[in-house]
Image 1: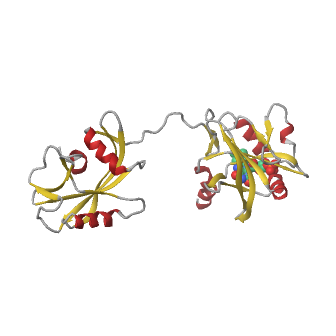
Image 2: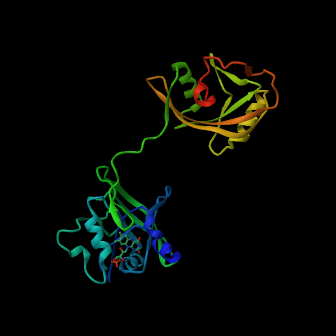
Image 3: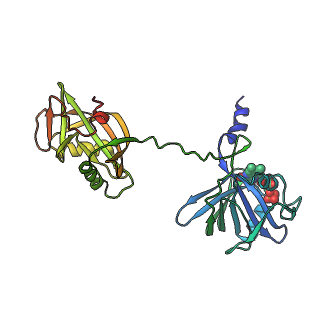
Length: 303
Ligand SMILES: Cc1cc2nc3c(=O)[nH]c(=O)nc-3n(C[C@H](O)[C@H](O)[C@H](O)COP(=O)(O)O)c2cc1C
C-alpha cells in the first residue's frame, strides 16, 4: 500500500509543461518535455529545470544555455512528441508539421512559437538532486503571449485552465466617502490595508474608539511582518486602555466602498480582555453600541 502511495505522489501535483530546447554538437538541436520547471528568483530572474541525464542534459552541459517554452493548451501533441521520444532515437525537430521554431536572440538555441511563455536562459548552476539534476538558468530574454493559456499536467492527463476566475471572496461593505477617505489615508497606497481590531466587551459594555465623526472598535494598522497581537496590545496601551488579546474572533477580507472607489481592507479582530473599565484617552465604553459605529455588523457581529 505504502509503495503504491509513494509511486503516485507525483501525479497529485498540477504543473505547467516546458518544452526545453537545447543545442549541442553530438545531438544537434533538441527538445524535451519537462514539467519540473519553474521560476525560482525574481532578481536576478532564474528558472530551475529538473532533468534526468539525456541528450537535453548533455546539450546543456556543453552549451551552458537552454530555452524554456511553456506549452499552451493547444500544444499537447508537441509535448507528447518531446516527452515521448529521446534525441538519441530521432531528430524531433525534423518531424514535419510539428515544431515551429525561431532562433533565440541571446542564445544559440531554437525557441518554439505559439507558447504561453518563452525564456532564453544561461546556465548558472548544475547540481544533482536525488535521481535528477537541477539546472538553474538566468533569464536573458523573455516574452509571453496573453492570448495563450498554459497546458496543465496532472494525474497523468493534460488539462485546460478554466477561463473563469475564482471569486476573491472579499465582502463588499458600503461606507461613506468620508470614512473611505480615512481608510485610504491609512492604507497609504498599499494594495491592502491590514489591521488588527480589539473587540473588548465587559459587563454588557463595548469598547469603542472615535473614527472621524463615527465610532469603531479600536484598531491599529499592522505593517508587513509585524506581529498582530503585540502591535494591537501596544496600541491599546497607548490608547490608555491596556487589553490583552485572547483569541481571534473573526478574519474579514473586505472591499470598503463608497460606490465610486474602494479600498481593500483585511481586519483580524481579536477578542480582548480589557485591564480597565475606565473610559479615557481615545476610547470609551458604551452600554449600547451607537448606530454610527463603522463595521459594527462585521467586527462586532452585531445586528
Ligand atoms: C508531460 C511530461 C513531462 C515530463 N517532465 C519531465 C521532467 O520534468 N524532467 C525529466 O527529466 N523528464 C521529464 N519528462 C520526460 C522527458 O521529456 C523524456 O524523457 C524525453 O524523451 C527526454 O528527451 P531527450 O532524451 O531528447 O533529452 C516528461 C515527459 C512528459 C511527457
